[in-house]
Image 1 (cartoon, rainbow, N blue to C red):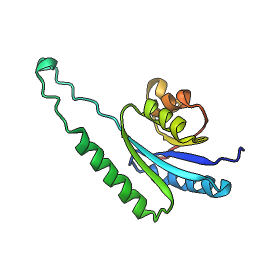
Image 2: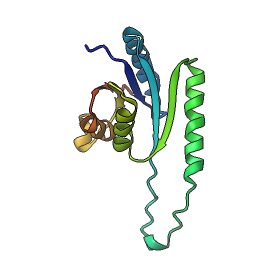
Image 3: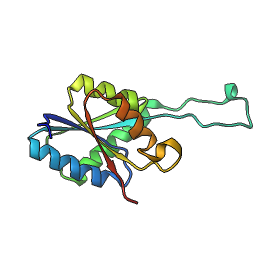
Length: 146
């Protein structure tokens, strides 16, 4: 195993966060590495087949969604008494945002959970699979237990 210097943990606020955090903290401690946590707010507009999509009000406050996600990440960090962990929330597609974060912050390991159960996503999960192929560094995909 490489000596990692900066580990990125992708957070999505489901129950798998506990398992991912435990592994991320262990690896960060073993490597004396910096740990960052990133949550990506991905907005998918609702589909309304009964109305013309061009007449639907798509006005959702992006800033409000980001602020709520920041509060959730801070709460998660406080619940686990995390110290010296960089917390980030960004808006966009997880595959692109995580990849850009890794490049911008020189991360050498990404830790992400996987719990996809259908179609091609059965192997890794749709987000984990997309992230895996976009990373310029090592990625640890943890299989989440139900």
